[in-house]
Length: 287
Image (cartoon, rainbow, N blue to C red; front, side):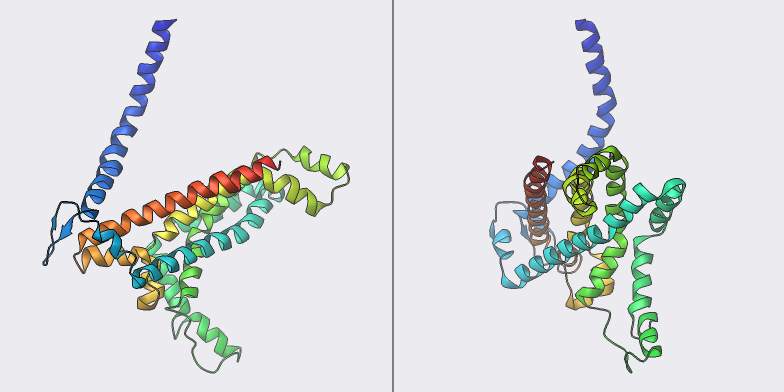
């Protein structure tokens, strides 16, 4: 019996070792480098001197940078909420009303993944530009007689991010709703609950694992996004991802850029832990 357990443990270790080595080399080691750099001191012409200089973290609390951090969190939360509001009805429809067309509908949702994020962002530049499709349509309908400033705004960034990350919300929601036991809905309605009460008291609480997973998958990349804000937001809608990119590639202040990256990671982990423990636990207790 002991030999069997020992052999099973060795087999499990053998299966997990490639993943562990991969994550260690390409995730943990770079993260440790960033953490070490965040306490270093950047040279005048680039480079970094390792040491212990906590001033890099104090610099984050400059009102200019705090404004960028707050803007980033607001846009990321707005994007997550909009993706949930748009994605839940679609996932619900596919799971309960899709029938034989479920696989086709899921395929249509995944089609945007077949193209580069950069190309999808540039598509929004074409749509929202001064001479783009949106402005031409508005002028054709006589809603406005001159081009509107639709691009290089927080709203344009939010639209581009919702379009890009909506599938990340729909797929976990669909997976959670697909496993839902429909007899629970029938039982609730037989006991006199309306469709609205059945949804809020039965369906939605039981789909919380999908809501939590989708929210995490959308919120994390949204907070670190820099391609979409760079193309659709311009200099007026700088997010933390753009600021980190500028510190590493333009200002060559690797120490401050690393401190920003560590601070963003800590904020994201803290927000996710709070969301999962508080919101998720409350919903599951109400089931």
